[in-house]
Image 1 (spheres, rainbow, N blue to C red):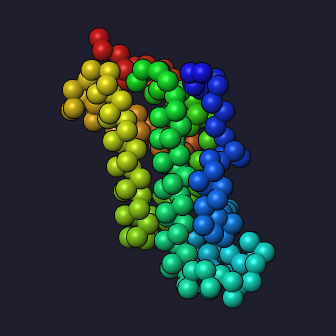
Image 2: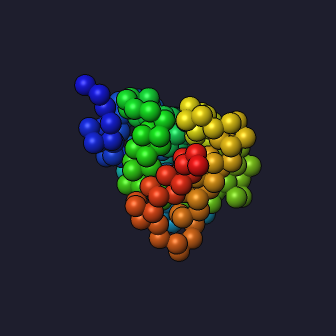
Length: 194
């Protein structure tokens, strides 16, 4: 059976098996929740343990220290917020234009608070910034590939992808509310060859 956005119900409540079974996932999700709801300045071994309802000794056995934990958060976030979307995209059957539109619909429904929290953290932390650059590069590479598949040149594909990606991320940081219909219209404008 062909999979498309109508048949593939990808929500963050229904994580792929590799994320549901991710090592130390409960701890990491607790840390991301604190970061998202209260900011990085609230991240501590104590606050993570309280959020996860686990003992500090267990935390130290798993992560050694807070820095090791934060590296695990970045790895998990890359897996969840980038590679999982690529897997969904790989499962969709359709041409590049349909895949961009389907991905736009999926991303429109996604909770962006984790993304905002990680990006805010990256403003102050070189390690988080480096991880974020990896995420951005990977996402941009996928977009460029899709635009090239539609017949755009390398330069056009890069520019169109950067515009689409930055406009998508930008709506999370501004008071500009963009509806799904407007996001689709932006995609169609960028995919227009005339």
